[in-house]
Image (tube, rainbow, N blue to C red; front, side, top):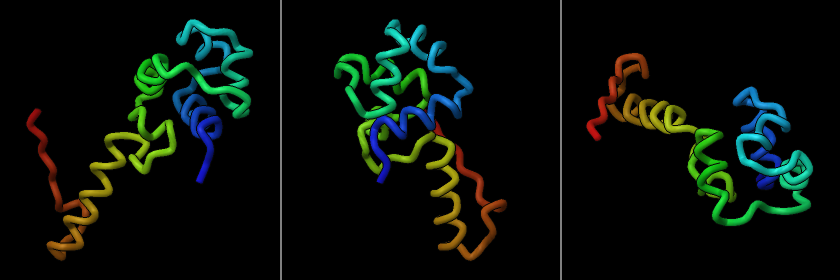
Length: 99
């Protein structure tokens, strides 16, 4: 399993943010971001929700939980399970959410 820092770095890069841009968005120094990504330090707990929101993930995922990285990945996983149970292809499964 990957560490908090590895997840943070991967998600930041996937979002197309440099460490400098991410630091500015979080209102911290680039050194703080580098320390987080190298597992030399952890952000304060009150910052986790903001980090997760900026990166588009669930805070639980950042902390090592088994939650999928993104909502669309979770939907795609469920689509595959439903297709397998119904004996059809994933392309034939349409999922509609009402929030």
